[in-house]
Image (cartoon, rainbow over all chains, first blue to last red; front, side, top):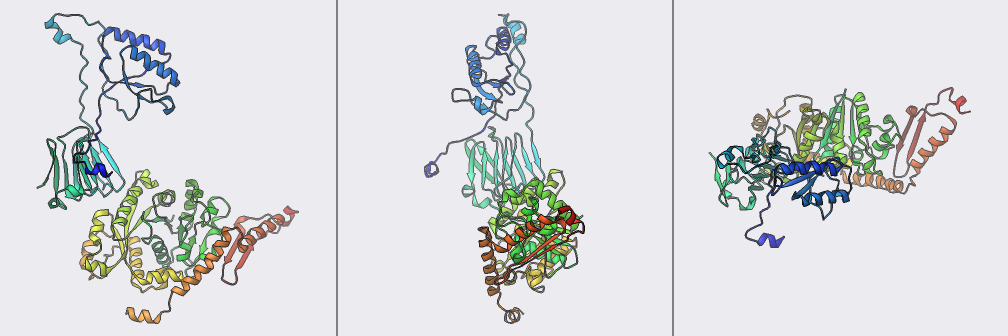
Length: 246
Length: 271
Length: 87
């Protein structure tokens, strides 16, 4: 503990979410692998360099079968970065880690049925069956109309707006910015999904901790002049900036 | 159908049991039928504060386990005949409190009494969550002191999520009862101010009970302060709280302050 | 006003001490399962139940634990035809 505290630059621990391709194998695996091979043959390298998660929810398999499947996928250049929906007993140190809390996004399109050919350069621009970039839906934001009580924790991928106060011992975590129309006495963490442009606003500052994109300030590091006043926080490059509001 | 009140706080030693007994006796003095239920299984104290400790035959756990009928376990107060006590078990483990058992007991008490006051144990564990589960109204007992205020805030959060009312999407009525308020320390500025506590917790104020020797004396002799010394400052504050609980719009006075000034500020907030 | 109340009242601490002594004496006994009053209560009810079918709604048990003397009052309503059933 003391060693950490005396380090001038703490390690930044951040959460970040990524788009991964999810494969849901079906039993018997042999047949499923045949279909997968068929898909792969239509688009060489479709799985190459893509993060792939294996969803085994509801499959009646044992660890040997799972390890075997992961091995066979590996032989096809499909590297599994994580396994979802598996009983803890199925997993081990030799298998990819368990993943949970995934959210469905727009389906990743299958490669076009026609095999990709060497096409004339002019044509290829339009016809290239590149996987479309994931549709960027606006991340869900959250409006909380009640005070956030000690011990409570709220999270939204987008902005979080709180009409009341955030109590000491409560925390609000947002992928975007945090707006608090009451007093901030607890913790507010904005831009946690890697958004350095996120800001924190509050009507009255009594915070225990504020953080943006992994950079944080505790109550002791906050400018004393801002205490009890309307305040905002943002990042200037890698430095934490604070200022009064209004 | 009676009203179920939970007296809760999160933190221990802030005055839940004293307040349960005092409010119960004050409500019963108007002739309402009142039962005060001790949920602190293993560490019962309500019987002592109400002066019934020598007369406990059966307890809440006996009733839940089917070893005694509810009517057998209820102890009638010697001074007020419409005031009853349902003691907690001192010897049993609190795992004996089951959700179904508590539901049955509270359901039965509601049909017989006008007010069912549940004296919650400290903490946020089983005993405390079961005590608040069936409440229509919550009285959050808080001392003007940082750790008590934070624990109260935590409890308010639980009231808004773990009670039946909350689960059914209704709002549970919550009131703040500020206890052990010391006017001398407030004068010196060594105590959290009433409006600070109100601002932080943002629930309506039911009353302010001054720190007083009368409370200690009352528990020494085993009598709710509203019975032991009806003219004492804490008793008067509890009587006022009861009037607000019944829906009267009575301005709250801060002990040691002139009546009226703060009444104007808090009068609106008082429930 | 407080002074007058202060002088005209008896001290409450002795009352507290006496109440606690009686209570703790009984609680220590019942923790060993050897509290006489509780034992009597359970045994009396058991014996009566051997002879009469008890309606538990009609049984009223009262206890008063004192320093020197404890009292136990068991009030049982016995219906007229109860004896027949038991016989």
